[in-house]
Image (cartoon, rainbow, N blue to C red; front, side, top):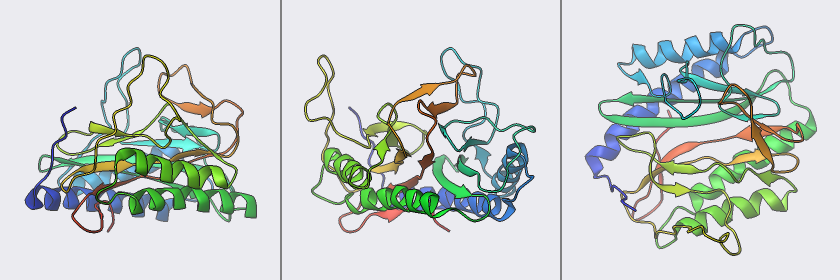
Length: 262
């Protein structure tokens, strides 16, 4: 495993990329209303990113056995967990829960962040679920301190989610971010009591200068998922509600720095 530690100048550059992503989220959130399409949200994010001299990080991403990703954002609605493809005919309605994920390349570095929103007013059940899922992100950020390991971060997220009766998706993880959108290390949202036979779980100790995206992917029901025939969209098997919260952070000698805030 090769983990690229960033110096203060590189972290500052990543902070600027993160601010652009945060602006895109702010504009999409302001536009959320019944009747808007996910394609319109995608256009909003692309405009913000390009107007700030950056380029969309997701557009054209390649994946085996799937077409290149065709958009600036992923837009995942209700029981869709991640990687939903924006479309003109995906029209939001009152009460929909939508996870929006986007990233950009800016001056050689990547910003990456996701957030889950409600169209209109959430029910108490939805509000509680989203509160726990967002809290899991901040719990993981709080655990991203020296001398912890990746396992400590993963277990902090898992324990918070599961103590409230929800599940974490186990097939998908957070990841290092830097000059590339996906770098080492992987940052799971759970940790096995013992690794499955034949699998090795890397557990590096945190170091100042590590930068990674923490992204709890939380399911209100069981944690099982499947990928749809479009090759991208991942849904909960039991069609229960999903949430996805993500920030890119930098580990320091003190408190972690959240890089994807305004």
